[in-house]
Length: 404
Image 1 (spheres, rainbow, N blue to C red):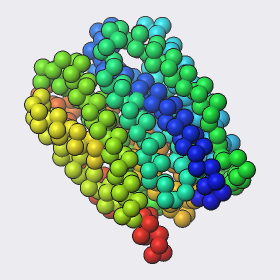
Image 2 (tube, rainbow, N blue to C red; image 1 turned 180 degrees about the horizontal axis):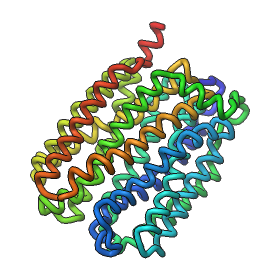
Image 3 (cartoon, rainbow, N blue to C red; image 1 turned 180 degrees about the vertical axis):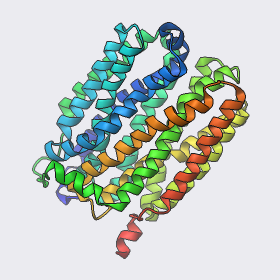
């Protein structure tokens, strides 16, 4: 971290807050689809596979565009890339108001995914450029909570709009406005601070040579796929099998992300204080997986609400702590963190697209109690594999750095 950035303690939080608002809008848009499934399916005559494709298309496109998006951020700066990304998300969602079938909805979901792919890897770059190492954990936690807040809003608000056209119209308008806010207040680097601008090819080359980057990518490939398989199917499963109203099912599922908000801040702060990263991620994945499996088994009783809150809280640390690693690994550094995060984000999003589509949806396609049981058990086992891969990562906490 360039210590010159520490001369701007107030403004760096303003920049982070502006990026936070923009990411809330993107998360809101993405997770409107599961909460609107009960009206989208009959209105557009969608099959289960088509609904899954509309929901996961942004993740697929993000997998494709994360690597160039991160490399372009390293080359041209955070501000222009995030501006383009959030504007694409907002305008493509506004356009959904006029669609009449699967093809148009799928195409606009793909455009949303381009924006998602560009913005994702540039946020770790923002933390690396603007924040000192002692604040990397909490800064990463804060920007990750933006997507959680957006996700929770999307899961809760969909049924309250009445019509899916109105939901996408309002979400698109708000997100487009937030893109304008970022244009006004966002910055690529602190004023007066110079950073090395690498070639785009070098950004990707450095990342591809790191064993840690590939292990982290595998970790988030499985975690993101399992998480989206869970959150994308739980509302419909609760409504169809547990006889919970769509509004309550969406609200209950949203606890998974709302509970993750304090976890995404408090657990990274503890990690910064204790000086280790890996034990917190490992414990969070194991505890969260167990809690969320039994959430489904015990729903809709009060125990299910308690378990989903606990699971969401401990899962909250996974994203911010995982994306703190590239900032702190010595082979990556400040100059190449955008490209490295692009590689990680690309494979993370690939998991978010492929695992729900090719593994979880086929298991749950019958929409019976038995098929949902098998699907949620498969998701739990995937989280267990994630925990095993985390053990192989190189620790970067303060105690490890001081020892080196």
